[in-house]
Image 1 (cartoon, rainbow, N blue to C red):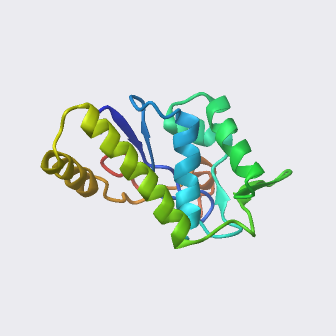
Image 2 (cartoon, rainbow, N blue to C red):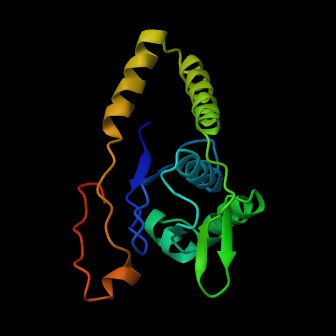
Length: 166
């Protein structure tokens, strides 16, 4: 997907969070892209129950989006009981968050249907679509997460360096 923005989300506390990929040209609203990707990270077990997630401001800064956009995604995730807000502590993955391969498969299937719809609308055949998918698969390597700004203030921890796309 050309025109997409890949952002390496910082390691927050001592919990690495995989990158969130925002496609500004996608018809899917950015808040929904954030919501879907965090749900997938939880569903796959990449973010476990009790794990902290970046603050609204921190994630908005990293993704270069309005904080209200991230706030909307977090609010919906809180309503779905995927995230929980602990007053004075931050936002965390909820203890009862759904962690199932079935949920992750459903999300992948939904994304595949969206890809097929866009490819067909663009006049691409199956081979061309498969080539695009293969290229995207190979390009989305998981970069090494780096420390959050809050963690870097602690001088006892050695800061990590940014990845090439971060």
